[in-house]
Length: 365
Image (cartoon, rainbow, N blue to C red; front, side, top):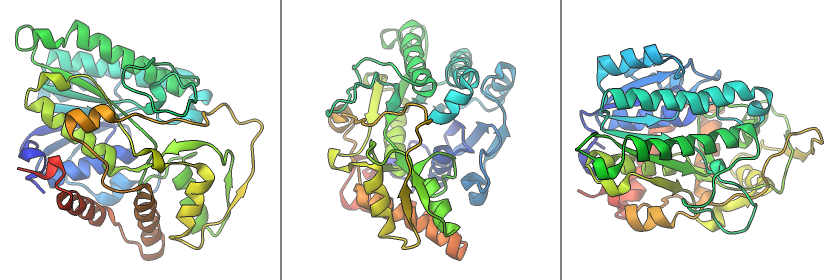
């Protein structure tokens, strides 16, 4: 495992903001397996159960708020990270309608404070994780490219669009590649990923967690918007992209200091109802009922990404099909609820084995 990504992460000090969340816990687990010195900075685990707590990772876990500049400063001063993966965020669309101030403060001002701390301590590489919802969604049938307009209808999506604008501003103003190793020593990239599924997500108002919790309780899951179409992918897919991008930045490849999309193929963009039906193949306890909520706030019906840039320049590609992603996700929860088993390590090992069999670039030496 330590040879992946050209062995770049072995013995590196890697700071993950949001390590107690769904994506962050998977990333922390993978980095630890690769021999990194992982430092996590985050609020307390957002759910019970918590994937992060179940993994019981032997990392340095610091409970803190990215809006707390003094605390951030002390962490950077103490640990001097080589690279930061910034995932900490208020990540839910519906929650953003309830508390827009918290959403913008966390996703925009929190990101600003992370960047300022990186600037002060000359962090070598920053990978900022935003969202595919950062685009100004016209609900057209083709995928958005990295140079398409940013926007956001709801507060969450808008806050992620703002975070991308902030990223671009810092890249121009303070981390300009033309001035690399002249006035600064930092490379900054941002990542926009599609809908991510996988074991260990218990956040409210996420389709798979709602389905799995309902099945475990022998209840029907209620589907608000069955025709909404999303680019579904297993959590390990975008993480492999983030890690590959981080490798390039640590290797001082300035041409990778930009924005990147990481998403599945077009055929893996399917509707919510189709996603439920596929999930039911792998756990017969799953049952659902379509129950539109007229009072539900606006959510996009169609969103796709064009990942040509990552395919061509990074040589990144998806490993698991959408169907395989749903299979691995449902079986993770089924094993957890029925057997008390955590399949995270098994999932990661199988994913890496499949990548090696396809001779994927980040498995090569």
